[in-house]
Length: 160
Image 1 (spheres, rainbow, N blue to C red):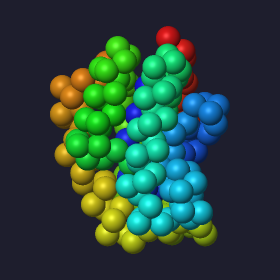
Image 2: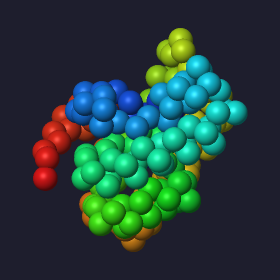
Image 3: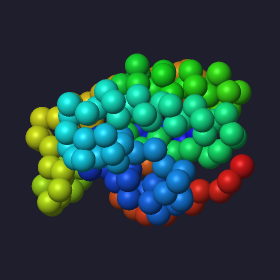
């Protein structure tokens, strides 16, 4: 399992689409759209994550590469994902898009479809930064931190 971690606007969905098959990506936004016809409907978040965790369990049980595309900036959210990998004897890698908050805010401002309040992105960014030191101890087999848009662009992912 690859857990993408970063605030909205960091480029998680773009990265997932560039490197993985659509069937390999469990996107919280896509699952909100699935259950409520709107990726921005925060009232659908609980149902979307219930669906995400059900699909994650099925994919891990089948030993399928799975990418979790959500902010994942809070430890409690990551713990539930890591519990699934332990249950199925799989490994988890954390890929943190720790881009400057200004980059995330600028990308958010350019969005036509899902613009979030700047305060929300700033809160997500602070939570992500607070998590950086703790991630290796949480149970990830590897953590990779990308700090610039160039780091994201130059990323190469190899199976194995």
